[in-house]
Length: 130
Image 1 (cartoon, rainbow, N blue to C red):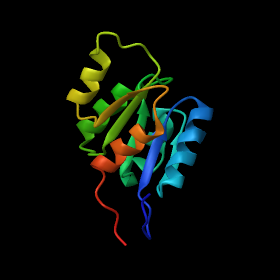
Image 2: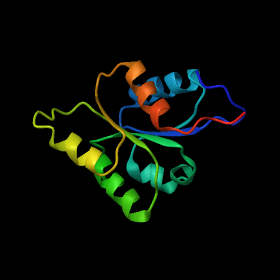
Image 3: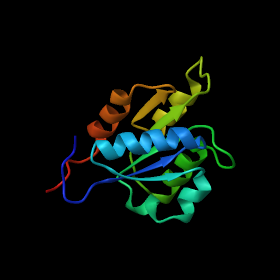
Image 4: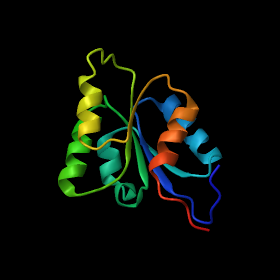
């Protein structure tokens, strides 16, 4: 569990409301601040993309996909650690390879273990300050 005065913000982008809520609860219990979005467009309309310490991003979203959002972020110079999540079959590993080659820090398949998600974030985020 992270203990700090200013919790690090994690943005969650997934089109499944129940999953967004579950991830929000998990991350808050781990000491993070969390903002959730149903689409890449919602995230981009917010200021969270500029303030987030990390991003949990579904691969398949309505409108702009998670991979397209990652490409946009790289092109804009935004350096936010991304943990991809997906329920889609990626038997050949091409989606995972594309995401990781573009800089993602993890690629988790739904349903994933809570510990795997927390470990991925803890591994890449700078230590919080007290």
